[in-house]
Length: 407
Ligand SMILES: [Zn+2]
Image 1 (cartoon, rainbow, N blue to C red):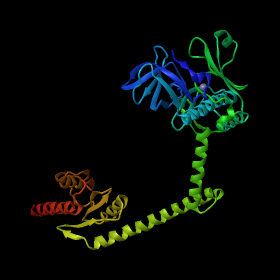
Image 2: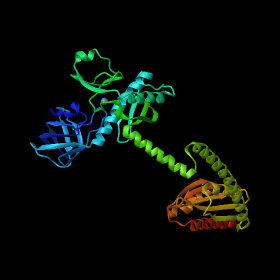
Image 3: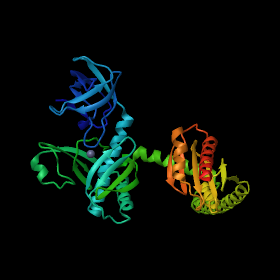
Image 4: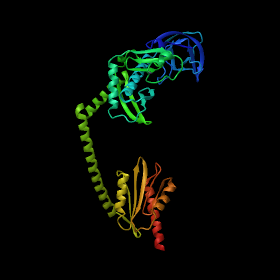
């Protein structure tokens, strides 16, 4: 059984130990030590990282059978070796800040709103707790955050201690213990008491600050995402930088940003509406000019046009305008995301099937499309030439026409 030094002193970042077992964990070499300051993953808190002598410790796990602490290494160490263990202290202290902040925030939600924490995850970037109540008032999150920060400011002692079942029975706890035997309690003085095997700061002031960053509905309750300590400060710095960049772009101070962005969005909306109206006018003009150049094809007239600047929506409008003219066949092409699109449309008095025609010209070149007798659309494979496909369509119509005339 490994002696867990982090229980005795969570601030211990360097220690001496002896390798009592060498093994492989998964595929990797690993060792069990006679004692360790490395925290193994558990209770929502990630494993520590660091070094044994100069060998990186890449993971730390508890072996379920005998609760031994297994240090997974980058390269092996022999049994009997004397080692100096060093923690990646920045990482561990960050975990201590997040974890202690979690205790305080969970108690804040319980005291203020009778909302119990039913989930906890300490991630690489964010920490989350899941609350069991989905009917919290809208100011609940701000109030819980304020109470948690007050407890942090009050710099209360945080004390872990092991208690037996008899003592335990006389204490009120935020949550019942999940394991048997002597129980490790962690107390934030006069505020919170809960069974926990994790690592914590020794006074709440060391957390510095706690900031909620997101709240969302989750499994009938809420998931609350927060940052504590250095993470919260780094986030503050990032937001300050972001505001400074926005201020440069908008050439204004923080207070003017919101009205300025609102005004800009209003202007964009108006310009978009004006642009749409103007382009619609351009489409109508183009329709007139194309009709003026329409080529006769037997009893009908054909308009063939490939556009390099109109959108699909505008091309559909154009086709709609053109097919209002009796006897008109419309063959349009344009590009969308580097691929050709074609639209074939016919005036109501043209008795050709556009859906059939589009399949006849697209299938041989590996394209896809279909539609109704008077309107069909399809796409070409990348690299296929729009002009030649439309030319094919026109030629086919010409043959149909000759056939019709012959009859
Ligand atoms: Zn804890």
